[in-house]
Length: 162
Image (cartoon, rainbow, N blue to C red):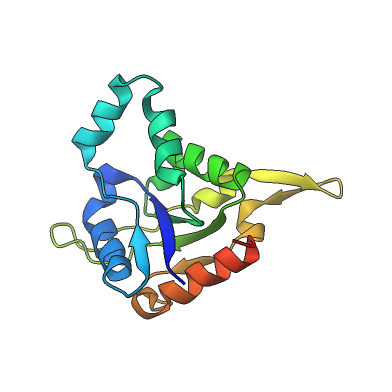
C-alpha cells in the first residue's frame, strides 16, 4: 500500500542527512512523501495568513505516518515539537529515526541528540507515559534504515490503525 509520509526535522542543521533518508523513501514503489520545501518556502509560510501552523496542517493532510528524523539539535526545535503534537492529536502513526550517524557530505557524522518524542507525554493510569514509550525509535545506520524504513512505516501505520 502506498503511504504518504510527513517528515519532521531540523532543516538548517540536518538538511543533507534528511535528503538521503527522504530519497531512499521516495524512490521505492509506493513510497510517497510530502514535497520537500526549502528554507525559503518555510520563511514564506511565516508571512502568509495562518503562518507556519497552517502550512504544517496542509502538509499533514493525507498522510498516515509522521517520521521524526532527529539529529543533535532537533529536540529543541519548536516546530518539530508542534508537528509531533499535531500528529498525535490527528491519530497519525509516529516513529523517530536517529540520523546523527548519517555522513553529511560536508560535515561528516554528528553527535547524538535527544529523541524529540521524549518531550511529550500523556497520563495513563495516574502516571506519565512518554511518547518514547508509545512509539518506536530507530537508528538509521545501526538499524539499516535504508532497507528497513518501509517496514517501520508500515508498523507505525498499523499501530495507529491507518
